[in-house]
Length: 79
Image (tube, rainbow, N blue to C red):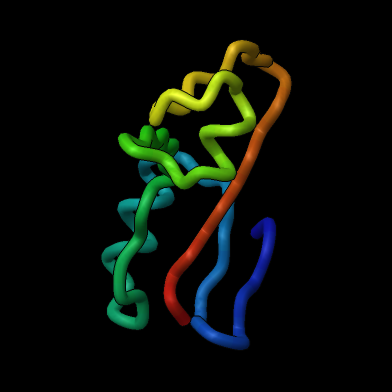
């Protein structure tokens, strides 16, 4: 187990094999098991402030640099 959650949701994160995940999902006390996912997002008509970061302002956000050693995590559950 990596981390346990109890404030807004009851759950935990863990590293496990596919077989272990199947066994966990079969447990009647477990609502569901979900694999970690990677998401990317693009935005048309970005807010003025975001558009300004990649000058010139052109109603598009097109970052000019990328890095493969940067991770950004945003989780907005609305809770």
